[in-house]
Length: 82
Ligand code: SF4
Ligand code: SF4
Image (cartoon, rainbow, N blue to C red; front, side):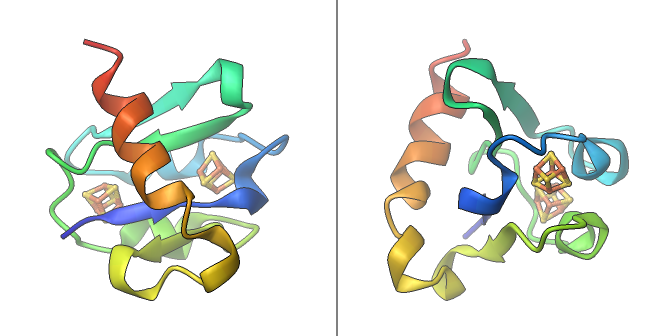
């Protein structure tokens, strides 16, 4: 599994999560106005969720219904970087 960044990040993008992630798997997705998590690199430690000031980060299995689209979006945008 992995963690997922949802709607509240859009327009905030302060990168606090990037600074604490031990796996370096959080990346900017400028065209979407947010950061995204690469599910292939995430070790599910959860420290990013604790660091986010707007509670934008969830475990993939706990993403609120309204933000379900962010699960595939994070994976697609993160993987399309390479
Ligand atoms: S859960 Fe851990 S490894 Fe995954 S994105 Fe957050 S800080 Fe990085
Ligand atoms: S800490 Fe939260 S608001 Fe800031 S970039 Fe990460 S997910 Fe977005």
